Image 1 (cartoon, each protein chain N blue to C red):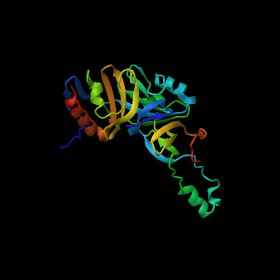
Image 2: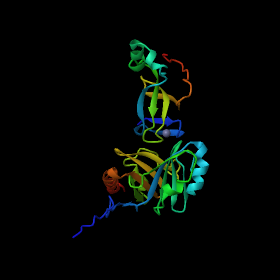
Image 3: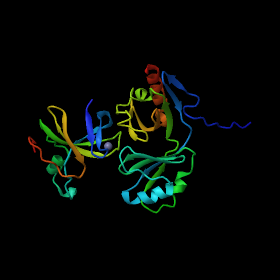
Image 4: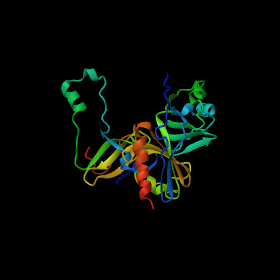
Length: 181
Length: 97
Ligand SMILES: [Zn+2]
């Protein structure tokens, strides 16, 4: 009899909530870590169908696809429909480095009126709407783990963390959610 | 918590996102194979370590990941200014070098 290996998501079935906040794992997505000089931005934006933002903390979105500014020559590209991002970039001749990190990261959504407070339980950045408006994104820290944070609407944040840190990050957020209120 | 201005992110960010990376403006001798052992020791190991204003490399490791330079006062632990890597060393009053 053949045993078929079954893949499960790192945070499958987990869910946490507190007063005014829920913490839920995101669906699988495809992701690319993209590095490129200024001269390549136009060609890469065209191939991806989303304009690579050049301002600090800025993100851009088009359909299921997002481009997050992480540094002056670095972006995290996410496609929630698991589109083949490497194929989309394979014909670009302009200088760039694209590394598939789809399975390195996973997403956790923190949402509700207390989402900001829950994230500030471990993230030292100013997450008020003035400093971190809808669409703002940043690599930062949550407790002892590095995360990428994206504000998708006024009360929702997408937390991207490395898969091996996901148990820590999810548990941290769950504890913070219990303390919110 | 200290707030440090990252010249690439163009805003102040919490110190937890940063890492110190040694003294700034130390030029690597070229060609390095031609210098004496004493000169190599001076380049590689000897640092000024003054009391007061220091020029340091810092890295926004949990942010934009860039190295940049900072002027800091070791007595007050205040950051006087930060600037992008490759920019000239600013002369500040009270600078020891
Ligand atoms: Zn920075």
